[in-house]
Structure formats: structure tokens, C-alpha cells
Image (cartoon, rainbow, N blue to C red; front, top):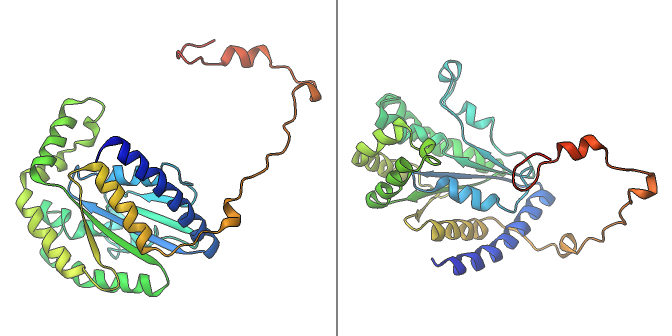
Length: 263
């Protein structure tokens, strides 16, 4: 997707996202959106693009670290249920409970029996979630081996991006085929009518971001509340002179200029 085409599409979509945001708050809707995919598939980029103009008090990102020793003894879904949306909230999961279906079994972090149990339980867990009135959307961002290699090399050579390349990412690269087998099994077992998977071609980052946003807008009912989008009349601003205020020398001294140098 060309840059100017992407910019135009994003500008239009952001207005629609604002309508969606207003509807979710007004109707106290509960929305959970799961983003899964291989390392470097662009999950974080999609989420950042969605949030660029949105209210962070309404849109919440969940990217959980590895479970603690205590959490490992809990029901597997327990730490995720704590992160589910309340009324008037949209939660974006940057990886989710589906770690148990792909990452954990391939990396040897869980047993085959635990994965089998998860694949049986996940559709029931998601059915309870949707039956409670929540909207659940699940996206798998697909990236080819060649494109992932290109992105990995970029991260390996750029000090600003090196933090994105973990030892687990590198091991996952080595186990490419095993990941695909686990992913296909996950899709077959957990693609349901009440919580279907949507696979997005993420080889082109910009196209993937636009496709995800359009899909979200198609699958969450929202309205245009014209009154909520009326221009706001700003009140007159109080002048410093009207209250006898003068900036202190300390405030001037502490100011940082555009150059980055202190005053």
C-alpha cells in the first residue's frame, strides 16, 4: 500500500473508530479483541495504529508477561479473566490465552495433555464470554517465512529495535514448521460460530493494519451520534494579568528548549 493511500484510508477509518468508541461508552458495551501471530507479524503495529487517536481510558492493551509461580497453579484462564473488559471498555490482547495452543507446546512450556485440555476448554470459555454480552474478535496475523526473516534481520542490525528480538523469538524461528502445525490445529479446534478466527495477510504492514481496522468496524455494531460530534464552544481563557500572575525565575530556569538544552 502506498504511503498517501495509507494515510487517506487511515484518516477515514480513525473517524469511524471514534464513532465506535463513542457507541461503546454510551451503550456500555464490552469488547475484547485478540491479536495472535508469529513473532514479527506486526501485532504491536496494528494495536498502535488503532490507538493513535483513541482514548486510552477506553481502549486498554493487555500484554501479559510469563505467569508467576502462583499463577501456574491456577486455572489456566484465571489471569486472563481478570483482564476482560468492563462495560464501556475495549481490551486489545497482544497475545492471549492462545499462548497455550501454539507458543507453549512448541517451546516445551506445557505438556501435550495441557494443550489438549486447553483446546477443549477454549471454545466453552469463549462461549461463556459471548453469552455474557461481550463481543469477542480473534485475529491471526500471518507473515511468510521470507518476510519474517527480513524483519528479524532488521531488528538484529538496528539497536533501536533489538529489544524486540528475544531468545524465544530466535528459537521460534528455528521451529518454524512446528509452529505452523500447532497454529493449524488451534484454528481447527477453536474456530467457532460464536468466536471465529479471522486470518490477515500481514506481509504488507500498512495493508494489514487497514484490513484489521475495517474488519473490527464491520463486526462491532456502532452508530453515529451526531450530537456527540458537534463542535465544542471553548470558554474564554483567563489572562495572567487578570490575576496578577508573572512567571517566576525558577520556572524560566527549568524550561527545556527544543534543542534539548536547559534554559
